[in-house]
Length: 461
Image (cartoon, rainbow, N blue to C red; front, side):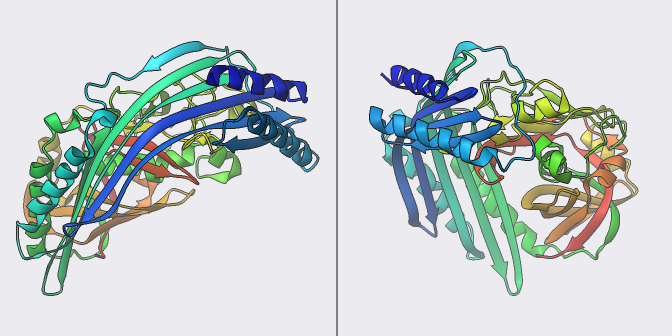
């Protein structure tokens, strides 16, 4: 049994001198399908299992992983991890220590109605092809598309030398549609994604054909929009753009490993970093969100982290190592892409709390500016400087939406933008499933309510 193999490996690592050991076993099945212009660009069904072994010896980490679970191979991997820790310990200027955590024994299962692993691949292909067909039947102005379906179902076992034993079954399902329309020299993209910690029942409440129709209609509609002139403007942001702002531009700067290496938030606990209307949380909840977890990959019970409370910086996101340095409790933010990756401090579901404005009221009370809807992605750095591409924008004049725009970008400094917020809506939504890449990919979600703030608006697409 895997449990016996893992227990033996743990004992062997301790015998070889490790002061701490954790072992992660993972098995699962995954499907990934991408269709573009009616053609399957990729279609993969994979089954995998493996073990990741991490040891702490003489103040240094050592890590090894393998997918061949023959007992002698596992023993060799343990020896490799211990040797790596020993060989790097003399180069360390700071000996690593980790915060103490009470060991937990638990079994966690997500409530799934329709396991994707039990759904015929033909049904999954039908969803993707039906969406693709809908897009291309919409208009001859459509010039490109991408329809991506993916699912994962698996089991993880975590044990450590503290005595933790946690078994987790998890499932995620995801669909993303991207469309580009063109007329003359005008190009407009549109994008939408759905998914989360959910099974194939995702499509009982979300019709992929309707989704494809809406995304392609948006791309076509935006062809008639203008490109705005650049400048600092008052902007009303929708839920998805707020989610991108708090995750990409601000959230990463509050991950304790980046704080230690130097971010805009280093040394600012207790200082004002946003308007008093702003509270930002990274949470393992809600159930069903794409970043949902019960325990992180260090066996720590995941809990909400109130990063910003009424404008004041209150906490960072931590693993056990950074928690020891900061003399705080670990927050359950240590996550790995899979058994073959070392856990890093990562976000889960990051969002801004709701305020008390109606979204329509925010627009109505704006004399001039822009209403921005839907994000296409972007980039940010550890200083909080960001540039995001926006799907759709409207010029606001005396509280009314008077002119559409396409090819819009927004940029600024996350802290300065958050400080400029003077209205926060009551319509909190966490609805932007995706995978965050910080050396490795992990599922996350983000969101927030509508807000009003000041930032640089430009045209770029």
